[in-house]
Length: 245
Image (cartoon, rainbow, N blue to C red; front, side):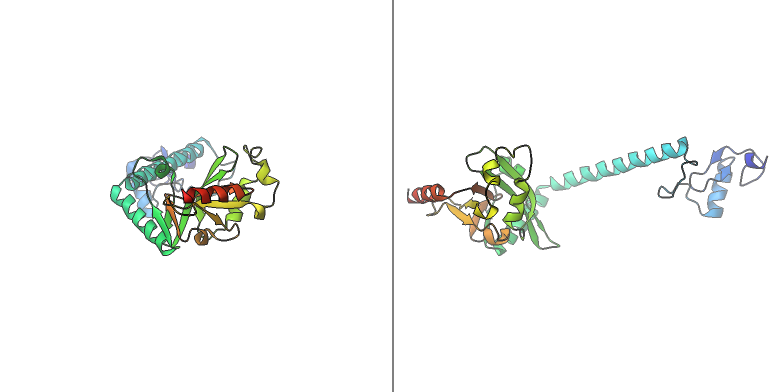
């Protein structure tokens, strides 16, 4: 008889069980009274441990509702973020900070017009907290049609550490086999020097140096495009010939 009556008034049969403290109550007055007396908010603590013997359909439904709520909050945050990022003033402010940070490293960073493909691909960002640039980098492999893109490459990262990830087993590794069969230090990396018309259209990069050092005194459109060669004699001759034209 004691287990079938309201835990608050001790008179009427109970109808409701509080998700927060499991007290049984008979109606709204007793629900409010127990919350005031115990300072209960009526919500189950999702992090509390529940033994398998105590787990029932109500707890399963509660956990499902929690996951649905988490998904709703995440989707809402994503929509708000997208609305903020679509704000032209926000984007222009970020580009201004990014260009200024690149200029401090003696890099001339140029941007394309809105709607251009490379501008849509570009995820280069400047972090105000760390005072560092995270670059988007496009890699092109000589004599292959493989084009790979990395995002979030810190400017203090060495090119060698990034290259190693591309030469590991993957869906396109058979196309990159000529590059895998040689030592990393023997690979030659070049970046196109903009604007066109310079005497040396390509600049050879140091595979062991940081990206910050490599991009000094270089003009970049949106993000660096790095060419990988096993040998560079032909490229150097071609680059010099273009510079003379």
